[in-house]
Image 1 (spheres, rainbow, N blue to C red):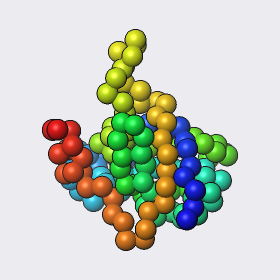
Image 2: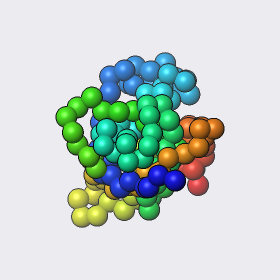
Image 3: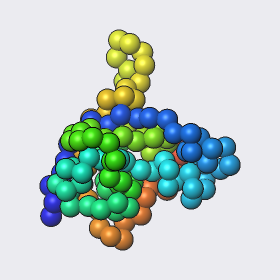
Image 4: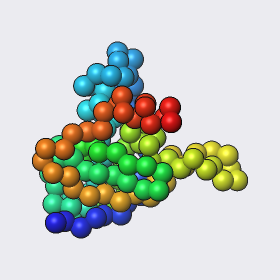
Length: 132
């Protein structure tokens, strides 16, 4: 079994994701652009995953199953990117500290490869979690 990989996730905005959200947050297009983590190729190798495979992303705030994609940027092992979305929001701590701003730009998390049959955490489940 591949090891877990610890990363720092930075959330970003994406114009294509924003356009898909305007059409429907429940669409497959929105899910494909939002339930995605972009990793350095070294981290991909450590996890023994390829583009499109699923990862469990977890920390003290929560967990989600999302797809993975190899970064086209220069090497940045240990640094991952996710679009700001209901999936990334599951990983943001409830406590905001002294600054009163949630920590969207430095989310510590552990990643683990899922079985081939794993599915992305459905957005309906994410919304149910938010209701408590």
